[in-house]
Image (cartoon, rainbow, N blue to C red; front, side, top):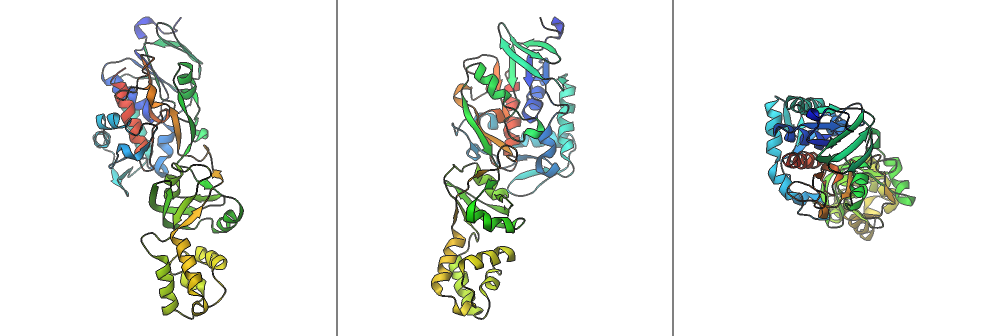
Length: 397
């Protein structure tokens, strides 16, 4: 028996009060649907609050389907077209939240990410969403309706939305619940793995990187056929920074990540030019004109003889220059879901309708947001997928 009176029975139960779940609740509530939104955490929207350094990179103006990774590269197109970045920006402006474009189309709050969460909660409250926090799900089943057994009672509804996200950042409550429930109902799940995650190294590479922890510079980092020109940061375990995080989503174990330390420049020509212009300079000094000093010193120690530039053979400068433009590094892994910003993989899109993310074989079951095998680039893309996928599902429940 359902613990709530029949007149209060919801039209839809949404599991997960994060970005996608809140947007789905708002979308459905605006259509007059009675929405029950459940989350096991004591506070909603944990990822919203920590995103963008606390300022929430809430969308990207250049959001396109080709900037998402998925087994079906076209799957995201329909939802992204139905609810666009401009639609979310209009909502932000309606609530008087000041924002700015940082770089590469990324939009951030001028103030705090709490403004975005407050906006979503206000919108949900305005349409009568019943939000229940600290509500742990014990079991989900289906007979004439979807039944959800929880720590706060038993609930039933004709529609169920899985919006509990993926496995990234477990300290915020991330679990594999959406994947487990999807499997229970016969949906296939692409094996999850960390995405937008720092890369780790071992051996000589790590020995070079560890003393450089904290050094940052602009690079071109490439994995597979995708390259990203952004910042890179050396860490105690390897490499991080936007360029590396982006490349990590395309990296496959055993493959190299290629780093161009001087993107847009011919490193060999620059080194030979400095040999002519500064013949009495030490190699590390000449290299420090091109790279951060600590990195220059470390690379000079490894790749140049301890001589003044005039005495360094052109051959050595050519070899070092080639490496600076094409530094092939093979990671030994990643820092895992603990440091990953997103989860790659998830519920296979082959089992979902593109227009509304409803399960093809299970009418009334929807999967949205990070739980789906759709993962965006760094820079607001994953929030936009949450808004878009949540919106279209909310229009269909």
